[in-house]
Length: 228
Image (cartoon, rainbow, N blue to C red):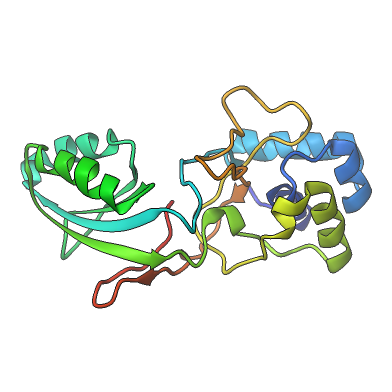
């Protein structure tokens, strides 16, 4: 489906204030509440926007690791399934060259990564080699990604309704990560739960060709993206 400018404004509003009521959103966007509710349902039903979340914790108090994995090609599917079953592994990506799989791993501490995750990697049949790059600072994550299609007055009104949590997050370079909590006072069961220990609320995302946002790797180690 084609996403209109009005659709983008609605998604942007829900990125900032995902728990806003339709009536409050209507006053800010200048569109009737019923129309906004129907528009969101259309976006959700078509797959143009969706809800998801992952455990992350406080971006300033966590260990983010990017792991390159080599495996026996005949067991690639088996290795991928085993990696995806590890809770701390938030993404598993297939690579065309240099490595077979790329992982994003998030743990509360470096010790947990070393003692829990690495030990599980060693036990996966068919996994032949892995190389880890630890990120020392997370510059941006999906929780802060914004479409940036609203004007200043609309942004200010939404941030006021969303409270201090949203006001503390400035729009960032667009990334691939995102999530959404259904708007209104009553979240849909199974959606819109706070993430990890930081209580970050999921944010809405729409289809986009934007690349991921950067991270700052350890000295001498590669690193290129935030968790998806």
